[in-house]
Image 1 (tube, rainbow, N blue to C red):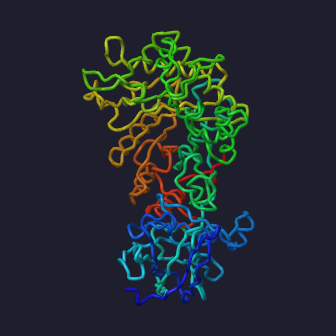
Image 2: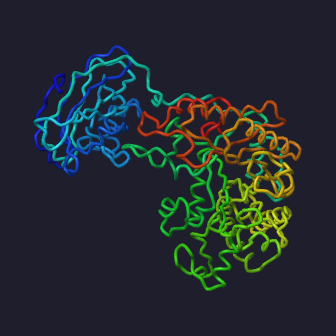
Image 3: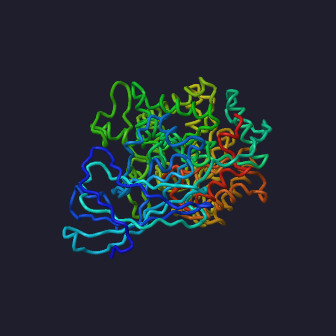
Length: 606
């Protein structure tokens, strides 16, 4: 059973730190390739002090700190990097993977460099053995890709702290095979083209006639970007939400895009949920007073100074629901706290979609908020408007903090109004008779703009962004499938950017959306954008689908200025180690975001 293995007696390992079990000399390599060593070890089912091993039931990535540092931080040896960052390499970490830890800590040093551990291969149950009456022997293969040739290399195997392992370990003679890099391998940081010289196009005039200079300049810049055929790439909620960063040595404050290519997205997406502590609160609360609004504003200012434009979407709490709860003597549904205290409304926990659309109408099966917030705002219900204004005051405070630092913002209220999933959507814009009344949406949008301007906000550019797919098809009017664009447009005096949201993976649908929006922008002298789009990172074609379709707009009358991809980690590749991504789509994604026509923060001139 184990005739091809070398036996290594281990004994009981109860140390407080990782224990070096053995060093295995690896063969000389003359080219990049993969080293392979097969290990066999005894494991005990149901024993908490046995090796923390998930084999032989699956393939799991191995995050190996010492092994992976060099490739990510080239130019320093592992020891130099560790010393500079205060990392004790005598106590290497073995991060858990889906609840399991890895069997061995492995370090592959080659030519003074450290290569990348790829995967623990599929484990194989070798069955019960005479000398293992309490369990089984498992076999697992370590495959370690080295991007460079090595005259000598050593594989170091460590046991986790207090593992209680009391049996032997076996290993095969290591082999080397010349191979291409795996599809998930991420090498050195890619090169970028120089930042383009963008001619600001002041033919684009802000709808706010009192707009401050930074807002005028930003709109002219966006128009110039579109005129020149470039596309700014943005991501929602970075660096608060990221897929990568769970490995040792990772920078939790960077974005997934920065980890991959060394530059942040050019558009920083934030939502008004952050202003009330329902999103990103763990970052904002680092301020001494837990001031969510000020913390969000500070992040936007930092991103602007780093070359990224902030956009604030607004998933607003249903003001009528909040007000009705208050009038009925209820406390906050989520926190149990008073709804109104010390002159402030407590919005935390109050939703914007399913949590407030609790009534399903038997007429058509569509959900509607029983509190009718849009109609009540439109009809001048003072109680509801008072709550609505209080929410807008938070937005105004955020904007004014930016304005004081000469920082503009792209403000995106009432987004995806062409669907039924938000209280301001199609089904929410109905009159007392239940008839669809788009004038309700238009009037309430105008109310937002005028209210914020009345509060002194003049650094905002207003983004109109219905959800796409077959816009303005009147044969679908009165159904959940109707997607208005023109008929809910609030007017040129209240919009700066005509955009769209769409989660489609159908190229024809996306191209139709782009055509509708760019044609409309051209006719109204507006900037066009894709304000919320996405795609699956496991689809190798998604980068070409998104970036290709959105940037290649030669057939349209006007280019898009920017695209915003929704919250990571769901919709773009990310690192799971300094040199390995979660998806084989990573190379295509890196190629897309570093293309000459795509702008990240390192190539903007704001």
